[in-house]
Image 1 (cartoon, rainbow, N blue to C red):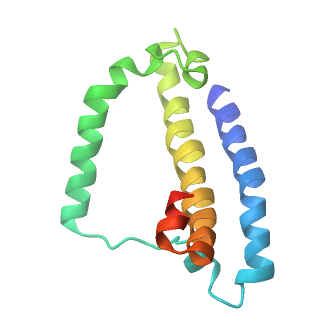
Image 2 (cartoon, rainbow, N blue to C red):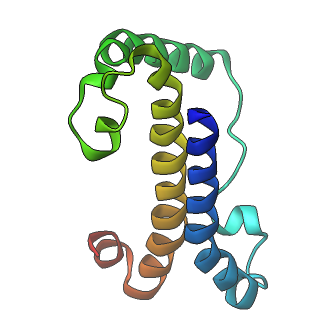
Length: 127
């Protein structure tokens, strides 16, 4: 049940945070580029080196973070404190999907591109 609550929260956050960029694209950006290119959602090239590096990163992250994942005192993780290993999957969903993907989509894929186009690279990135 906990995983379903987290997935529902991710979906709701995705809809709420995704409405503004999608509407902007439908009115202003549709003539410029396809949706995926407009927001930088492109399929990465698959290579053995990339797969190896992702595997090494996952291994290092798992060794250094998973044992301590439910002991953090931040508000998002304190909800799961004391739940042990049952909280690992929901925390991973929140960390990578809700926080990581949605933040990159909204800020880097949408706001940063608009600011850079309007103010130039240095001012846009700074803003």
